[in-house]
Amino acid sequence: MNLKQILIITGLIILIIGGFYYTMSPYQNCIRDIDKRIEEVRNKLATETDVTKRDKLELENKDLISQRESECSERSDW
View (cartoon, rainbow, N blue to C red):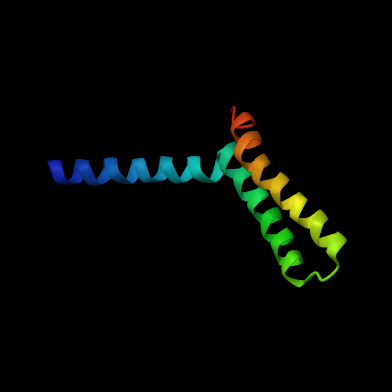
């Protein structure tokens, strides 16, 4: 095997390991889950006209954003 083949094989292995980590990482899973919930809340905010419900949704949105920043890093232990 020449150097080019070795580099290609090594690169593929690195990509496979990186892809596996990205899909299986508890941190990434947490981020994805919270991002879905944030998107749902923002969609509700875009259509809600009741002021009290909007206030609750805005509070929930802020809570989810802070949760994304703090809890995901705490739950990322394998």
